[in-house]
Length: 315
Length: 295
Image (cartoon, rainbow over all chains, first blue to last red; front, side):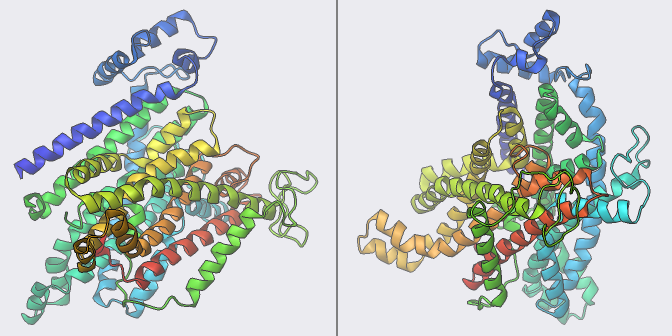
């Protein structure tokens, strides 16, 4: 376990290093002098001096990386030249919105996928399984940016449910305010995740239910429910966790899309606004944060999978 | 490698985790309907400027947000442009980006994957480690980041960025598929007979991984078309007035309450095309009995 963990941590450090180099280099993809592109032509010499110090622009490029990295490690991601606030504070106010939407969606996705996958796996190729299979296959081909548009069209516009439409979000407030405006985004993300979890868990459960220990449990006369939850679900939950881990990157991107449509000021909406107004340090900061977050969450899931099934680390 | 480590799954590949069906299951009528639909879309995309369509960029300001009629089959958008023509022209962008990117992925990823699985040893270890490092990257976010900085945007850059992002995915699928056939008796027999490496790769391994390669090609194509749509929706794909399915849905966003046709038809076109691609890919996989255990 310890050896496995050290190996994973080494890999994690490697990936984060690559991500940091990639995010750093983004600025140099801009045409022309980064300082001019980021600040615009009318920038004051003082602003330019601050940016030069932030990015170390007067030094050779490999030294620039270390200057930049040093700043990042001290939590200094630079200053947004549009809002004149620090990029770190922009991210701090936007990130909780993403996490809340994703969190709610995942609760619903798991709550729906687990029992439905069990129902499907009980009689593979039965009528229920076939209908669910065809339904999930269709849902797999509906991208989030279509689902959210359809939902807004019917629920917010045709039915006129208050608080769900575009720009219904009110900034400030606690976790429980704005739940209405999060409902459609969370539902969209939950649907996408549900399809994946359902399909993965279903096929894994079918395989698990053919194992000898299930036959053993059946011959002992245990109830169907007990066999499903205690004997089949536990080994199959590893596949589910693996799917959830891989899903997280796509989930964040899908979150960007639904926020953009509904103008909810999470990371996604902030990112697109920053791209459209050429506020590149904000873009860079968000990209870096999200990438590191995704990798860290993957690492966490990996760890949980090992706790659930210690055989993996012994391979 | 255990079959359920997180690296072994991805959004695209989860589509491959279908029902474990009987080997050699017949393709069925719906399969051919899907093939026909994909073919129809391809013909529409290739011959859009020869077909008797209205100008997709010309706006008739006397007829904005019109409902479908005989003259405008799908109605008109908020600038009075014919939605039907724009949907047909819009397929060009999606299909070009999809095919171009997945071809880049296959041209680089497939030969490397086959070689790595056939040679094994250090070459395989280093290459696979490198590819897994790339896979850990959240590809969608990296794509958004690169496209937002690498201005001015063009179709070519979009294809290159998505194409390179798809290399490790293709590599992994092809490598795993090759691994499962590289130890089969007929490959060893060919080696014993003194066949050259090139002959074994081309005549023994390639035909046997072709179904998986084709299946993943179609499912990967569908995934990339979804991604292109997402980029277009966020305004990071081709610039207006060039229509694409994604940017049409994006334009519909602002006039949802006045004009549902503008959201409906490109969405429908996109979804039907994706369902057809996914279904063909899935059916090819089950027809040749490729179970997920091998992937």
